[in-house]
Length: 312
Image (cartoon, rainbow, N blue to C red; front, side, top):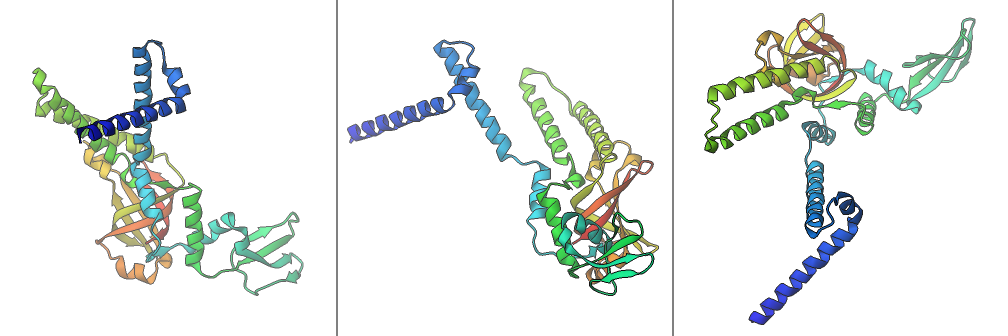
């Protein structure tokens, strides 16, 4: 019995050696470039360095940033109950993505109508050709605004023309850095190098405040389209515009509460769906997913203004 166990151990060891040699051959160029000492010790150190590098690369590949996690979560959602859809923005954006969405219905001049190719009441894009006295009038082929929006959303997600995660930017990294700092402080205690709780808290507050101010500075300069998951509050309804607000979690690290960062979503009532009008009530909070465009920054009040295209 013992002989069989011994034989099995020898076979396993041989397999391990073969696999190790195979790995060396497969990565020979990488290993050779890392060798500075041609002794066995030097070669072994080079191999260990390459192994460590490979493991680090794997960790990087396996790990996902909060932005990537947020993107995955939002892009995988298929069924939606819309509270808001901005038809004007959808009709403006879609022809830039998909030209065949619109068809030529009329060609008109200042003198008379040359041709009537379609509907009597065209809707959508109006463009001019090379002759200033002539204009081409188009209407959209599909009246289903939800389907048209889905095409825009798909384009944004697949072409990476949209930002994800700005509603929680750096929150996780700040928390991780603070936890790591506390952990390192604890590791110093056996060496009689003690950092008091008061000193730790002071450093943590300074660090958190510095990072929060950097985030606010960064968000004050960004432009373009964004997709977010937000816990918003209907702040007020003014001139038929529903104003939703979001308090950014980075505010928890600010020492000066007068510098707190907010997002403001401006939603004209005509673009609200029946579900939206029913659900959105003043003073209430809602968990929403929003795709929209950054339209302004209020430096005095630290407010990022966003015009939604969709809320669901």
